[in-house]
Image (cartoon, one colour):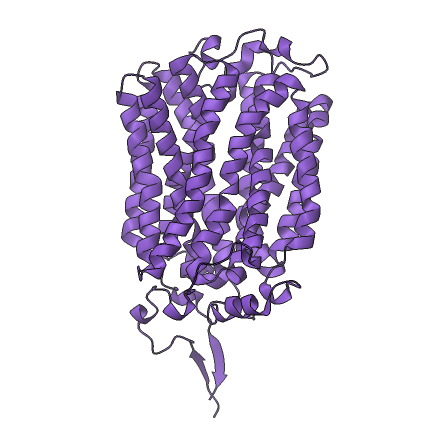
Length: 498
């Protein structure tokens, strides 16, 4: 009688035979050219993330110019209500320097909080579903359509604000849904484009575009608002996004096999480097096994703790600099933006370093944990130290630059670890871990704002100590339970008739 026996392609191998050192046969013997097609794909995603982050932060940067002078400090979720207006680098007549045609709205701090939240809630809802969808129908369509939608909605945001608060909130919510799909959907590319020994550099090259976008919008947003009017922040970055969508649909392909211009040598190299990483068959998601996977929990919890750190740096760095040094808006914009250009550089270099270590026979999990440690622990320690030091311009800016500059190392750690433990489900898992981590982007400003408003004297110290505790907890959990072995539930299982 015929029986059905479930076989695994890795049957008979021990856990440590796949242990996570990269097969030396897959390691390139010479320096790889940035002119290769896979690096071209990474650069295209890099600029997509640049546009994404600029569009995402446009409302935050423009809010100072959109509201009247009495509400400038409220964009920080109540965190600066105890500070005088000039501590934020502006004055009550700041809006008067704007072009006459730029409308100004009388929105309360609570209303502004709802506006900011509408983008964040929308973004969080679609990260995991878009990752799953991209794994099924391809990143090209999911991210491309989402980028079109986000760019059009950004372009029409000034019109939505003129039509009323309800229209603006609805527009930003849908925009958040589109942007969340870009965040979550892009990771499926590296399932089929990223050889194991190059994933760190390819992924970090793509993700570092977010840092460049953050630098650009912080640095140029205020200048554009002052010279052309705040609506042009949305017009410019919305228009850039619409034009870039055309390039995206022409140049991006979901895998090297379908790419019309890739060389035969490069195609064979990529395909041969992923022999047992993927299956041509679409497999259902093993939700029950995922819910009991400690390595997956480690990725999610550490993503949450690291996102808390990143959120504090992005949201509160301008406030902290203003409260300590009383600089004007333009100088504050430059000082707040400069650390992110350093982050952009270190993010790219971090990926190069991670893959270099893999070529030296470091285990993959060792590299992931080193990168995660460097991107988390030193940054949180420096911020705690900052709260105990007497404010000094050079010392403060040095600590902020180093702290912000180290955070992108995690791009070579927790943020691509799902590619190691479950390659064929990685797009969904990377979207899920991002979504879980992104809850910190909602909680961190709210809790930190409360701490600052309750204790004006030691508020910053409390914010940084809480950040350190959360960051350290997530990091320790990841260092203990993090793994880079393909999990049993992520292996291809075939039914064979005996």
